[in-house]
Length: 404
Image 1: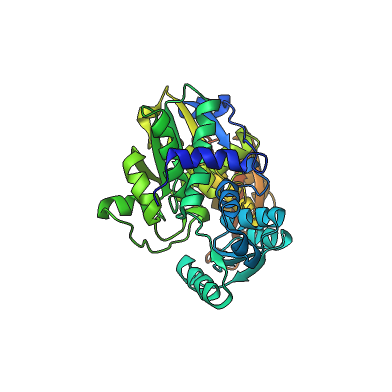
Image 2: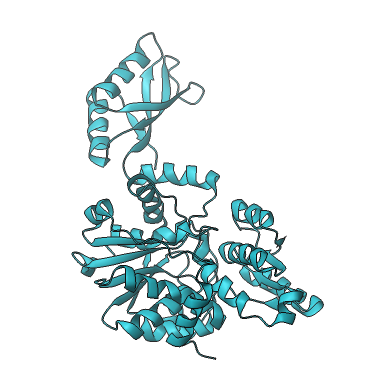
């Protein structure tokens, strides 16, 4: 059954009070760094940290009474599972979720805390789905697809209605794309009411599900690769989602993992908000220059989730600092006599850089027993500052090997 604007409006009324109307504030700092007039739709402020609550609550409320009693099941890398677990608990519906083994630990433990029966099975989404299908047949549970069920798509589309109310002069909406349920519902809502608003999808170069489907003219399997944007790693877009997206989405771009890590850092520093990789993709696309026609235009970035593993976040921050030219690592050959290290430190300090970490390597520093390799990690301002630091070190007689 195709999804319509009437379905999305009904979903909006149905989930009211159970799902917050997330804020969509204007961002001065993001506007400054991208050249667009940027607002952020902050669905990472939902109770479980993701837009997935919209579709989950709508789908659960649409279940017949008998199906509610038996319970529901889904295969999910995390956010759909969280939405089902939370709203299942509120509505008294038993929830089982099957997660692939790459699901972030924070999403697994949060689902368990919310009362869901969590099963970690399979190397990818397809294997997790196969286990969920087995349990549907064995236990009579209702499967709720995370991005292709019509009720899910209608629920996600409620975000489009909210954006049009909150930013009535919006000219473009930039939205992350994994399985396609969000962009399908959002684009249907937006294009039905404001056909002139551009809807643009952003994928990681490691995913590319919608772009591949558009090339083939039907959903195709895209082999999984490691990505910071785990929420986009669904292997394929849904058939229902694709049927809507291909009609209503104006453009799809991809962005590199380094830009995603830098966008996570920018959101943390400039917007004081934690986002996961998928939610950072729209900002990453603007920062990377993938959407030059949006300069000077009123743009809403869909910030879909904030459920990033804290252990991963710390690594992402460091990678972001490296990509930003604010952290560099090099090996300098110095004298192992008294004063050799002091001279190196003085040159670094005079260049305005700060040593974060330093280690000596004597065993592999070459045949001269009076020389030592100093492995240095140094904080800098930007890439120009790094270049100036390296010039100063070479002028003062310190041969360098720079880490890549």
